Image (cartoon, rainbow, N blue to C red; front, side):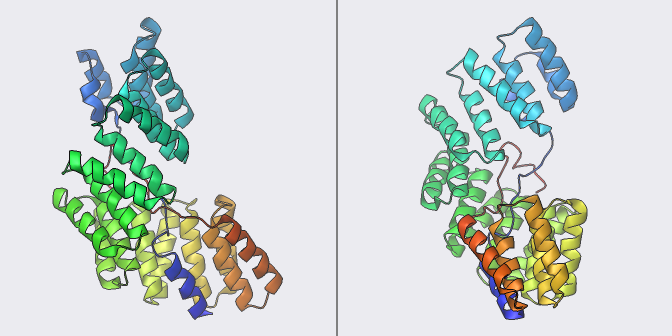
Amino acid sequence: MIIKCLGILRKISFIFCVLLIPGCSTIGSHKQLIRSPEDIRIAEGGDQQAITEYTRIITKKPKNVVAYEYRGTAYENMGLYEKAVADYTKAILINSHDVVSFSLRGNVYIKQGQWDKAISDFDQALELDPESVYAYEGRGQCYYAKGEFDTAVSDYNKALEKAPDSIPGYIGRGLAFAAKEKYAESISDFNKALELDKMSVSAYIGRGSAFSAGNRPGDAMMDFNKAVEMAPGNVLAYIGRGECYSKKRELDSALADFNKALELDPLSFRAYNGRGVVYAMKGQYRQAISDFTKALAVNPKFAAAYENRAVTHYNHEEFDKASEDSARAEKLQKFEPLFLMDMRNIKKSQG
């Protein structure tokens, strides 16, 4: 049983988890759009204040593109993606040549997993401004998430040609290289990102995952330890470290990390999946099945949990159930990106 579970664990070593990187309000990161001292005052307030104030501006000036962009960003920060899309769309309708609005809307589509819509917006942004680094990076993320890794690398290459110090560019390309199992190139890109920003938790997590997938567990553990130290509230860091402990068969330590991840995010289906693998390796069949089932309750399209539950059923001679779960996994099997960046926050993100 342990051998089979470890086989599944290794198989998903680099596709273990997804993250929309959180951060502080992104309004302040768009100060190039600010037109007046009043805008500066609002931008430095909280998201709810921004929504109230920009709504007031829009009421007075219904064709104010910048006000829609800022209010949309405040909605986006609050996770109100549909409202954010509506505001960015309104800005585009007012000015169809506004590169910023297309890029902002594309970033929200990324967060919603609507890759083709996002690509369409970044295509439009690049048609309007072929020098837009942000649009190349955004489109690269989409192709990465769709499993089109060569195209993703191509877009990140273009972004880095135009902006050699782009941290999102190196992190994004590093993820794409890792997905292509080009671990040396991946690690090199994460190293470059960390040269540019030694506090980039995202780069430590990405490099740790590349080390793990490339069978360098000691190096991976150091990176995940660093990420946990720097950002003790980062769910992804605990999941990555828990996976390393699982591979080393340090099962109690792995269990502690997955428990911590679930304490931080009770809806983390990947933490449930990881903990289920640990329970299976410990021979705790019922707990393993329960966790895989919880993972699938949160995300019914998570193929890895079906695979792991199938293995666990098979090892306990529940062959019909194993066959059903295996068929579901095969039908759903697709690339699971490590994480998705909010490019506006990546330089100062704590994860």
